[in-house]
Length: 262
Ligand code: MN
Image (cartoon, rainbow, N blue to C red):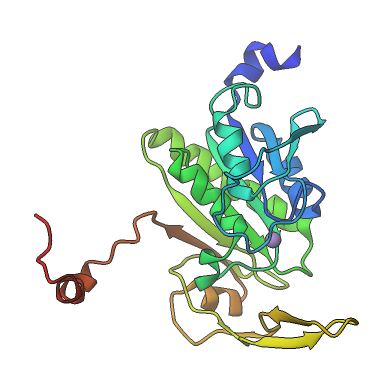
């Protein structure tokens, strides 16, 4: 078996997942590009899970379907996929060096990181102690071209990991529209969506709702991923798992009627 040759034993294992589902072109392009760098194990949702954020399926059983060699579809969420890929003994031949999520069809900039299943999958990897990275691109972009750029970033991340074997990093990467002017390390910007609740009626007269408007604007914030995106740069944003905000201590003391624990 090719997998047990000495050369292949040294290859790092990369878990690849997404939130657009096992059939998404961004997933296939990414997995193919990364297979030049590592042994790729794909565990992706059976159906699209965009905007599912970090949900885990705990109230029903999960079905894992072997699609082809090294490809598995799970009827769960992106975070389920990473949970299963890292803890199921039968999927990865060795513990994964990285979790790579994407390439998502649609940008995940700024505040999108709270809603994105693509970013949540990478975050689940980081929670499990595996350095992880999420990639997103505008839906109209060419997945294979972005995947080649993603592979370059991932190869650098593998090299970084070799030098920092105990660090667990989490990155969010977005490709811009059209020609790429370069790459920037960024902070998180802000996405201002056309927020709406549209009320409609079905043919039987019952009301239904659509939430989420189509448009989005980016307030000018130098150094952010939204700015890099507007200017045609790839953005690489380091993220943290710790949401604690020390600037809220005073307000927290007030509403708690207690001082900060020491
Ligand atoms: Mn998606």
